[in-house]
Structures are given as structure tokens and as C-alpha cells.
Image 1 (cartoon, each protein chain N blue to C red):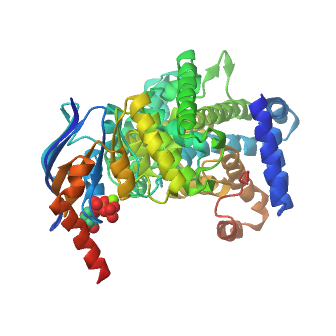
Image 2 (cartoon, rainbow over the protein chains, first blue to last red):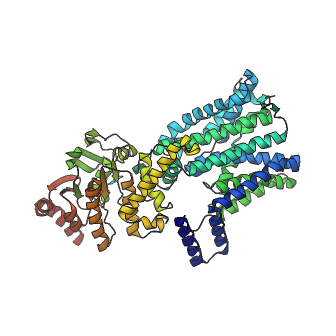
Image 3 (tube, rainbow over the protein chains, first blue to last red):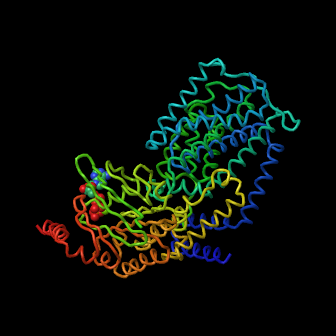
Length: 338
Length: 258
Ligand SMILES: Nc1ncnc2c1ncn2[C@@H]1O[C@H](COP(=O)(O)OP(=O)(O)OP(=O)(O)O)[C@@H](O)[C@H]1O
Ligand SMILES: [Mg+2]
């Protein structure tokens, strides 16, 4: 406790000596404020209550957009483990929701298996795919992963387009929605809550991982690969683990996507989707969990807000991104200055 | 007993032979040094020992076990830690985080441990912290544990590297030019520290150093290499009077004088 106080004092002392940027000062104040567990949990509790009430009070449109947002929180945090935590570049992340979505879709549609039982299989498939791609590639220089994942994204899509079991170009149609303790999951609110729970789990797991032996190892590797090896960190294994965990996040999100949409096709998993998620992660601030959530929000909200201007909205989005990356390469989320 | 044995080690970079049929052994519990003119191949030899370079010929036995084909992290786990000639700290991490990284190979918590935080994982985290704190205290940077590594003065950054290497709980510590860039006082503290590492922690120390005063003061045995070849070994006295060593160093000085 005493240690914490001196830490706080030195933090405020340092901001006082800088006294340059009032905004930076304010941000540091907020960080210090949030260091207090009571404040943090208080704000969180309020946020959760508001989010639980939201679909009951708001229009279906807002609920739908928010559901998409939660989905993006899950996949962006998943990709963040790969890109932000482990410092790897993955360009075919959508392939992992395809793995999850098709696993679930095929099992429900062709074999009549309960949705909830497809989830462990989906996780297993993600682990196998992650191992198959990451295993050989990560032994080489980590840059190769970008190219291989790009290829994998296309291979999965093309395979889905051409295989009988995935329904070729039409995809899978009429995937049955599950029941949850007797409640049939049919209304948008049900999916809102399902994705909210997934997002909260993703946030929780991300924080736990970040603040663990593994999380520290990822940070070290990002800083200096050789020094990390010299400290006894198995760089290849630890990176592979990040890649697999990220893949599992993607596959689980994909499984839930399959039952929400009830229909999936190869065109649901385009390269542009992978890029959008990567953008959200980079835009918000790689490796910073609140930043990534903000990035996910931006990527979901922007097209909605500018729906009125039709096709041009993506152009504007591109320009905004470009400007942001030039002036704020570290992402939207502010750094702590102390 | 010999803790590290090097047999006819040869490392080539294309046409350049950086290490040429070098053989020697390091006694357990001793403080020994490797010296030689610039570019003699000292760092290359260290890199072979720690798995960063693959020597083409010869063998390296650590506690009787060959580490020739092992990856660096494996060698560290076996108990051979190193520091780098050019500081290789995790610059944007705190001193504490830097030193905690050394304990990675002495802990085992994985994904499930991280997410669920069972009592075993909590106990392990505490142990990691305790070891890190003790190592920082040992080298004298405990008061700077919350600072970012990059914001420390050079001398303190060196200390972070030593603490980090000590946190891997090694049996043999390889220091590549630990005194480089240190002032006189810091060098005296380093001599003291090297002795304490051996005496209090029972760690064998093997160092590369250009500061002859420091080398002569601290080492029980010295190996000299020039152009990748071992040209002498012995006590400080013996090495200083060896004509080949004098030639290697004086020859170098003449070159620079021209
Ligand atoms: N990765 C590498 N590729 C090619 N040549 C290398 C490599 N590393 C070292 N060398 C060469 O090997 C020789 C020995 O270098 P090394 O760094 O081992 O010398 P050193 O004894 O540590 O020198 P110093 O005292 O300056 O640190 C030098 O000629 C160097 O240029
Ligand atoms: Mg060197």
C-alpha cells in the first residue's frame, strides 16, 4: 500500500515537472485514477448494467449494430493477441472465422449435432489450423507468416467454394438456431447477449494473458527477440501459442456467427474482412486492450454513421485512416506518460 | 571439476574463420576471462557457447552434456546465462519486467494458468517477483524497479542486464565486456560484484573484457585468443609475460599508431 502511494506520488511529480501538454496530463490523471481498483470496478459495474439494459430500451437497429460491435470486439481482441501481443502480422484472419463457422454449420446441418457441442470441435479445428500454418512458418523469420496467412485466407475461401460439404458457392443455408436452457435463440436480443458475453470473456482473457508469464514473454519478444531467447524464452513456441489462441478466438466468433446468420457462404470471409479487423487493431493501438475495443467500435460505427453518402463512405474512411496513421502511428488510444 | 569444456571449436563465416580449433575448460566455481584484440573472435565464441551461432566443428560440453546443437533458450534453461556486449535490454519495459523475464525458464504457467489463476500460478508469480526483487537488490537497482529501462543512465542499464541474467538462476554466467562504458567507480563496484556472484551465489563467471586492470584483478585464469586461435592461457602473471600475448597486443598498437 505504501509502495503504491510513493508510486503515485512520483507519477504526479513527473507530470508536474513536464507540464507541457495539458491533454497528456489529463490522460495521466485518468490512468492514475483507474489504477484504483474501486474506481475501476465501479465504472465497469455501471457499464455492464447499462449494456445489459441497452437492448431493452433501444431500437432493433441499435441492438443489431451493437451486436456486430461485440462480434468485432471478440475478433479484434483475438487478432490483437497475434498482432499486438506477439508482434506477428496475420493477413488472413477471416479464414479462422470461416473455420469456426463452417465447422459449426456442417455439424448442425449435415449431422444434426447440437450447436453447443460443435464449439469444442470448432476450437479443436482452430488449433489444428493454427498449428498447421504457424508451426512450419514461425520457425522461419516471423515475416513469412504474413504471406502464409494471406495465402491461407484465400485457400480456405476457395476450398469452401469448391467442396461439396461446404455447399460450394451457395454455402450453407438454414443452419438451425440452438436453444439455451430451453430458450430458443431467435431474437436479435438473444444474440446481443450471446456476443456481449463472448466479448466480456474475450476482454477478461486478454487482460489475464497480458498480465501473466506468457504476456510478459510476448512483450519481451516484441522488444528484442535475441535477448528474449537468451533469457530462456522459447520464442517459436511462445509465438505459436499466441497464434493459436488468436485463432481460437476467431473460430469461436465464427461459430456464433454461423447460428446468428443461419447462412454462411465463401463470400462472408473475404480478404477485406481480414483487413478491416487488422485496421481496427492498428487504429485503436496494437497491444492496448481498450484501444483495440475503441478500434473495433470505430470500424463498426463509421460505415453506419456515413451510410447516407453511399459508396463514398469507404473512400472517406480510407482518407481518415491515412491521416490518422500519419499523425498518430501508435493508434488512437493514448499512452501513459509517466 | 570442469563445468564447461570446449573442444576444437571452429566457426567460419564464409572464408573468415572467426574461431579456429579453440579448446579449453572452465573450472566450476572459478572466475575466468577471455581476452584478445578487437575482432579476435571473443564474442563469436560466446555466441557459439550460448547457441546463437552454430559452430561447424568441435564440441561444447556443459556439465558433460553437449550443447552444440541446442537452441539458446534451451542452453539458458540448462544454466548458462549471458549478457551482451551491446546492451540488449527490453527498452520499453520496466526494470522489474526486464528482470522478471529471466525467471521465465524457471516457471511453467501456461495459458490455463494465466486465465484461471489457480493457487499454483499465484504462488509461481510471487516466486518470480521475489527472485526478481532479490536480483535487483543484489546488483543495487532495487530503487529503480518501476523505471523504464531506456530511461536509466548507462551504468544502471548494465546492472539491469546483470540482474536479468542472474534471474535465470545460472550455474555459469558469461559476461561480454561488462565494464565497457563504465566509469572508474562503477568498475570497482563491478569487480566487487563479480566476486560476490561467485562467492555468495556459487556461480562460475566467465568474462570477456578489454580493461586489463579489471581482468588481472578479478580472474583466476585467463585465456587469450587472436585471429580466432587460442595463443595463451594461465594466471594473470603468466599471460602478461607471455611473448605471444605481448606481440598480439603490441602488434595491434603499432597498426593503430601508423
Ligand atoms: N555474424 C557475422 N557474420 C560475419 N562475420 C562476423 C559475424 N560476427 C562476427 N564476425 C566476424 O568475426 C570476427 C570476430 O568478431 P567478434 O565480434 O567475435 O570479435 P571480438 O573479439 O568480440 O571483438 P571486440 O573486442 O571488438 O568485441 C570479426 O572479423 C567479425 O567481423
Ligand atoms: Mg566482442
